[in-house]
Image: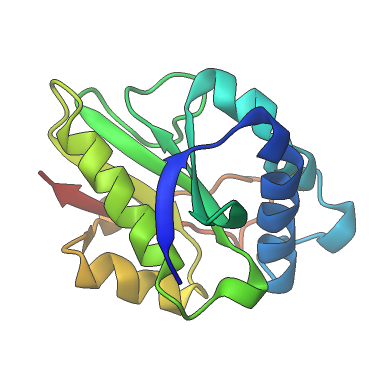
Length: 168
């Protein structure tokens, strides 16, 4: 497989949105399943692309996965502070998992961060159950930052997102 990373094209947005939604659903990451309101945000790649960079992993022109890279805060940033880039919505198509697609996407985000003037750190949030993703982050040098863990839905006490950072 020849994995290339590039900016997503508008004609790929629907496919990317569906890969992202299915990844979150299939991994049990949505508290309300198919009725979870967050699915709309996961599927709205066009909206993300106006506020951040949507990077896609492709093999020839076949979409394998995608990630949202937030270089300088703005509406897509959840936890980034000044001087930090943020990785969001990393998703790999089910049939493409186990081939290094996720790691390749994370590496591309780190490379983008290094090329961003004034960026000193990359941060991200992840769910407790995403063990394969945690292994990727740790292998690439990210460290846990428990003091930044947070709950995106305060009305639900049982959700805490874990945070990681990589100092560039």
